[in-house]
Amino acid sequence: MFENFFITRLSGKLLVLTIIFVMVAELLIFIPSAAIYRQTWLMERAKSAGLLTLAIEGVPNYEGGEMLSRRYMQDTDVSMVAQKRGGMSQLVLGMPPGDAKIITVDLRTKRRLPLFRDSFRDFFGDGQAYIRILSAPTVEGVEALEVLVPQHALQQAMFDYSRRILLWSLAISILTGLMIYAALSLIIVKPIRKLAQGLARFRQEPRKRISPNTGKISARKDEIGQLEREFTDMKTGVRAAFKQQERLATLGMAMAKINHDLRNVLTSAQLISDRLASDPDDRIKGMGARLVRAVERGVKLCEATLSFSQSVEEKPELRPVRIATLIGEAAGDALAEYTTMPTKTPSKIVKSTRGQPKRVKFKNAVDTNLTVMVDPDHTYRIFHNLFRNALEAMQETEAPALRVDADIVDDKACFNISDTGPGIAVNIQKNLFKAFTTGANKGGTGLGLTISRELARAQGGNLVLQSTSAAGTIFALSLPLAQS
Image 1 (cartoon, rainbow, N blue to C red):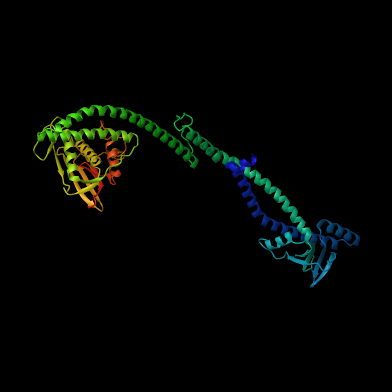
Image 2: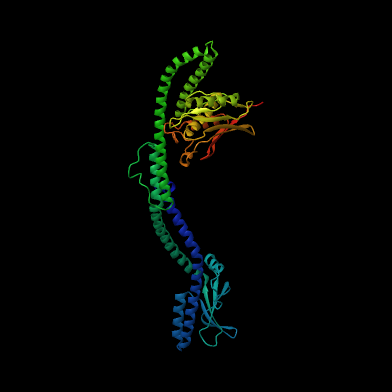
């Protein structure tokens, strides 16, 4: 369990890494400090040897000098002390070794930093050599003071120093690691663990309501606070999406019932329209055929709304269609919904909010030979919805006009549906193609443009708002061309 804590928990890894990093830093500090300790150790021997030389020469009694020399050699591990006069070495105490290796260290040459190479040599050497220390003299007439110490004495002193440094470094590392661990655990690990637990709970019960305490916005200004606020916003957004999904499911169920009942109602209307379509009078026969298509489109419109609420994409049945005729049919039906009287002029009359009829100038500038590869019913719904929206927008316009132009761009037919309405407000434009977000028409469902764009994209095209201003609005619709 203890091992699992350090392997899997972020806090355990943090503690171990902190101790390791502090130990590495202590190691980098130890290398120069060990070299300085070696230099200091040698300087202390040389300094004490100089003081001993003064004491011996100042004591006339040989027995006192001999006793002082033995005590000094026992305490400092010095093997020999000599004074260099006229190029010759004069022994003060001790005797030089026989054929042992001699390593010379001249303390008279001052350095800012000691040589690390000499420290490694003395620390990892075999300890069989002797170190000859040359220092400044303490007696007049002497050129230099020579001190001879065994290498193993310096090596043992460096071992003891390293052991003490190691214990202190370990204690400092553990103490520093615990302090950093406690600070980071409080600042980082604890909030992250809380977020992880909240994420786990949210994954198990995403629809559960947020309590006042858990939904509180974090006041931290750092990245952890931003993460907490983003997590809270994410939960709120997901729960809102679930709520909307439940409403859509309820809407789908309601639409299924409405669709069932509407089919029964439209069955009777379809029987009457079929009889009218078979009437010998051409005028009545044409009206009957038109009524048949209207009933069929009414049923398909209900089914499309049901499919949208169930997130079911319609599969279009593509075939070559002369688009100008289809546009004229959609425009005629849209204009007929708002006409108050028939007219033989090219203009149509729409209802005014003040009760006075106004004429709408409609211009179909699409080439009659232009053929696109589309589903006729789907494309009819796109144009009919765009025309109907434009007519509703132009109810207050003094000179309402509706126009459709077409251009060929690569393998697409691009249609511009323009009107002279008052334009679309900026706050409506950003949600124009979102479902259930209505614009100026409060009685709408907000599905018209959403479904129209989906129908266009399903056929390989697209529908976008090209421009809008106080002078009017232009929608751009692209549809694939039929292969010739």
